[in-house]
Image 1 (spheres, rainbow, N blue to C red):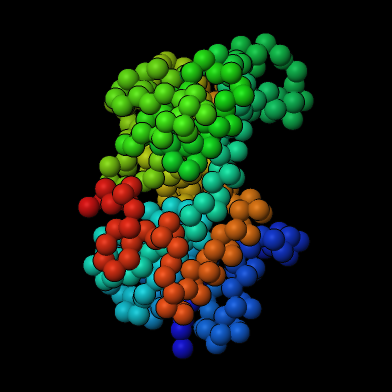
Image 2 (image 1 turned 180 degrees about the vertical axis):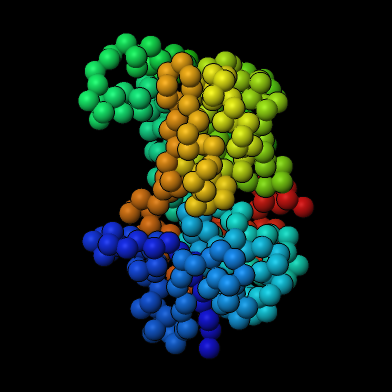
Length: 361
């Protein structure tokens, strides 16, 4: 019998009230009917920490691991070595950096994700966060909730997005959609930094210019948004040195992966005023510990500039339907010996399937 292990998050009463919360343990990505129909043993749990966790217990004989980027089961080399039967690791969503891909290749474990399932959701969240930071919305809202009314205290750090230079570090599926959504705001300029140049017609449609030098790119932007994959070449790319390249008072948005940033360096830049604001919803690890510095880091001038949320940008109800259906499709393809959609594959047969992740070699 095939055994599927799904590491998800508990929705509690919210999952009961909203059955479209498919990423929860209660609703289990819609896997239960499928597994019952095909005689598959399904284990669903949120218990993923430590040697005595359900994750540690069941990974030993699971054939398939399914998890999400929002509450990931970290498939480390140690776990892969214990997983004697594991054939497929499926990410219900986008981003498989919670898997040790080198170790997966060595064991010829297929790693696949539901490419494109949440690109619109994340791109919208990026634009929302940019506006929240640039307009100094957080402190203004908190002032109202607390009963205050001091316009000057919030207006002193509120700006228009029009006329600003905005750049995306990474111009793939999400980064490009961010540029599309920013075009109507009449920014002074839209920039992108990426290992590959956008096709001429695509760049022309959004009016974006490529900057090939990272220092030059960061130094020109009023707003920087991170939309690149996490791999060995990008881990910690935003650090004390690169933050010094930013314009003083620039804004940084990160909905890609928390480990793209050195957490304390970003907090220090916000606390010192080098950054006017930092926003996004990705952390490392996830869930973020209560003492994570990004929870309380503030810009001293505005008294705000913190636009962090729990990782939900790519898990809207619309996106959950897409990545739940996609995860079942990947599982079904594997069961029936059908080829996977090429764009969904991260590694297969001991080889990297995408150039971005291949940079981990």
